[in-house]
Image (cartoon, rainbow, N blue to C red):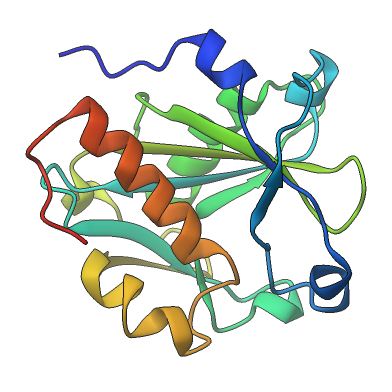
Length: 187
């Protein structure tokens, strides 16, 4: 079954608008508040990438225990990093995923961008389904395969997740359940 999301869907992506409350607390990604114009070609070549690899049954997800920057230290987030000069957001997600997990995963699907607290800086969010048992820790930031139900219930309110991560996970799961019906009982 084809799991690629067409570019037309990507162009309708939702981005986060930073509210006053979010601007005061950089750990919060905030809620979806508006639909942006289509990203320019240049916007896909700057910023950061963030990705979530789910198990085939959508019950586990690969997360990283952050050590930096300071405001993220000790908290869980997806894998990812900075887009290098001349690199597309898709190429950056593939590279970051492999550098941080050792898993040569090449079926990343684009979820959407959001703006960080710095205007014009985009974080491009990706997701996919893969063999989560193939990941391993390769940097100082520990790679952890987490139970999705635990993450979405207990950890959502415990400050163990980077703000907004649970919302992004739920968005990814909703997309995957539409693509791969009957794969999850997560509610």
